[in-house]
Image (tube, rainbow, N blue to C red; front, side, top):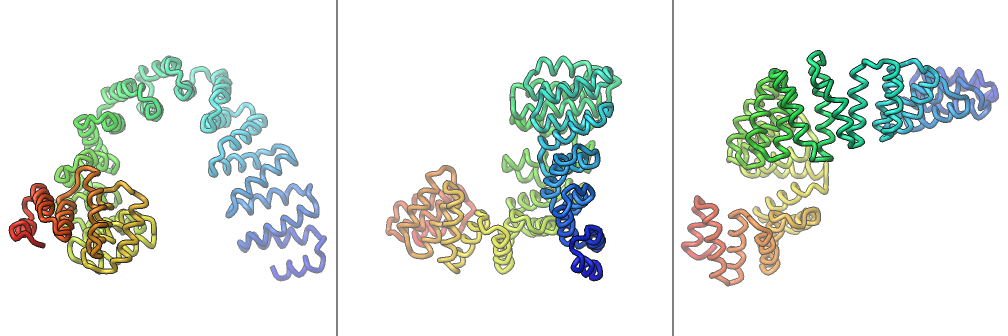
Length: 473
C-alpha cells in the first residue's frame, strides 16, 4: 500500500496506478481507501466500466444505499448488464425497495426472455410492490409457457385474492384444493394466503376456517392446519376451539414454541395463571431456550406468589435476551416482592438505561422507592414521566398519588388516587391508599369506607383488618 500510494503521488494521472492501489486496499479490507481510488478513476475517466462496477462492489459491503445508487447510475450510463441488474435487484429486495427491484428484473427478463424462474421472481416482486395488474400480465406469459403448472395457478389466484376478487380466486384455488395429488404444503400455502387476507377482510373468516378444516381432515397428523384454526378461533374469542387446536399443535410439534405460547395465552388473558403454569412448565421441558416460554412462566409464577420460581425462569429469560426491558422489569418486581431491594433497584436502573421512557419500569421503581421512603422527589419525577406515557393507567395514577402521600401533600394524593378509582376496577391496595389519605385529612368516615372496600377485595389482609379495628394507621 505504501509503495502504491507513493506511485500515485508521483503520477496522479496514471489510472493503472490508482487501480493497483484500489485493488491492494480492497484486499487489505481498507474499503474506504479503495472506494476513494475508484472515485478518482471515474473522475478522470467516466467511461471506465470496470471502475464503476468495482466501486459499487466496494460500497456494497458497508454502504448498500450508495452501492445501489452506483449500480443504477451504471445502468443509465452503460445500459443493462446481467450482473449489475442482478446485484441491483438483490440490494433493492434487501433494502425494502420492491418497485426498484421490479424495474431491474424487467430489464433482466428482456435480456433472457425464456427464463421462467426469472419471470416468476418478477411476478412475485410485482406483487410485493403492489403492481397487481403487472404481476397478472407476467403470470399470463408464464401460463402460456407452461399451462399445466399448478404453482403458477395458485400464485395467480393469490393475486386475485389480493385484488379482493374472491370469486375469481376461488375458481382457481378450488381445483387445486380438491386434487389428491397436490401436496399438503401447497394447500397450506393457499390457506395462508386466505389467512393473511382475512386479517384485512373479516368476511373471509368462515371460508378460511373451512379450508383449514378440510386440510386437517385429510392430514390429521400435520400440525399446521391446527395452528391456523387456533389462530382463527382466538380471533373469534372461541377459547375452547383455540385450546383444542393449539394443544394439538403441542402434541404434533412439541418443538414449536409458538404452539405452547399461544395455548398458554388463552389462559393468561383470562388471568387463569394455574392453567398457564401447567402448560408453560411442559413447554419449559420441550423448548427450554425459548424466551417467551420462560418470560410468561415467570409472570404466571409471580401472579400466584411463587416468587423463587419466578426469579429462576426470569433469570433464564434474561440470559436468552439480555436487553429485553420487559423481562428486566418483571424480574425487578419479583425481587422487590422478595425484599431483595438492592437487586431490584439495580435491575430497574438497568432497564431505564436501556429505555429511559419505559413507563412500566418508571412506575414500578417509583412506587418501590416511595414504599421505602427513599428519593421521593426522584420517584415523583419518574411517576410523572410514566403518567405522560399512559395518562389513564389506574396503577400509574395510584403511584403518583401515593408518592404525594409520602411527601405529606395529602390533597394532591387524594386527587390522583380518586382518579385511579374512577377509572374502574382497582386493587385492594388502591382503596387502602385512599383510606390512609382520608385518615390524614381527618375524614374518618371516608377512611373507613375505603378500608372496608379494600378488605372486601382482600379478606386475608390482617394488617388492614387491625387498622380498621383500631381506626388508625
